[in-house]
Length: 135
Image 1 (cartoon, helix red, strand yellow):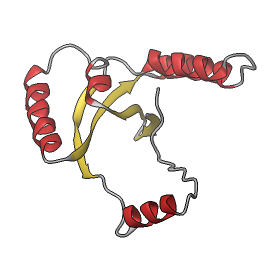
Image 2 (cartoon, rainbow, N blue to C red):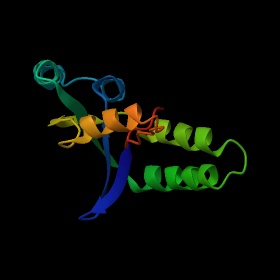
Image 3 (cartoon, rainbow, N blue to C red):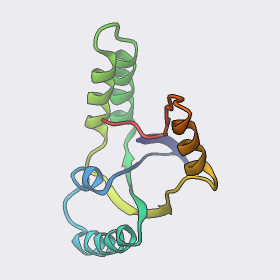
């Protein structure tokens, strides 16, 4: 997931995602920071935390304007819109610099597991909605 913003006259792409996805979109080099971040991610995961990597890329005006036009075309397409938008993001989400990683505890609120179990015992169908979206 990415966001593009203009700050102090410069245009930046900020991206968050799984380490495997972000790592394949990073520019060459910076192996030391990648190795340290991988160590931290492994420790966080071993502690049961949910992890994300963060990356950034500065865009020049011409690159951004060209991408913006392609994004508009994809987003307003009547045919295969989702795939076209995804392809346009794939174009811009590259040559990024690793900015860091996050780790959070990912668990249900107190009482939720028991409530779900009770609903299931009552033969009530349950749908669990999350903020995750598979790509």
